[in-house]
Length: 261
Image (cartoon, rainbow, N blue to C red; front, top):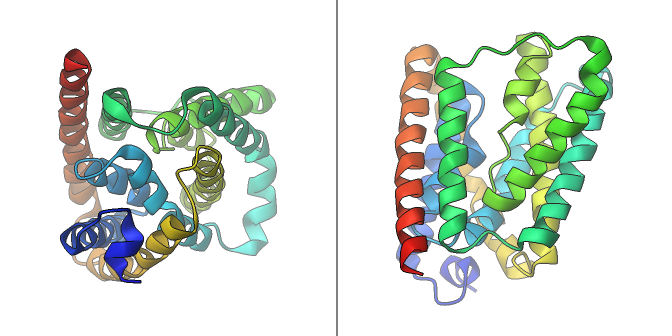
């Protein structure tokens, strides 16, 4: 079976190449700034395929790259204990959203994805996380997790409100990178489970997702090489601005589609 056959029923080789190019670019961005692979993948893939298909394709690349980011084992335990409630909420929210909303599809899914992208970009450009008292981490983390899960089920993007919350925990630079790796790994698994429950993730889709791992890893390697040669601040600024424009486009397209349905 060819890569195009694995991609989806009726897929063309051109679509497979386009998807691989998206994951290569997303890997470069993750290699430079440490995040963004699932987000940019969903943003660009949703322009050429249904959101549910895009979400299914990102499962393996997202899981593998974020498990790598979740190291080292020595500091995993303390960080996990601080964010375990959030992860439980994310799983519950994603599965509940998958049952309630179904697989991301149609104009509403594109519009929701656009809103999530704009909110994430706005936070990245202008946001400043407040300090969270330790006594409130448990309840707030659970609530943030549930909200993140619902957004994940609706859009395939699991950065809002998870990333602002993790930034507010004052984990330090390395701790934040590891916490995001842990959180994104859990959310990826929950997303895969939700897609499977809705019939959008099977053996053929898993095979296509596995194929997308290679360009994602190549992109990450290239991004890490570029990191020392680019200004991460300028690169992140361009990345967030591009996400905002993509998000606005998705919202406009989604609302236009909803108006004609």
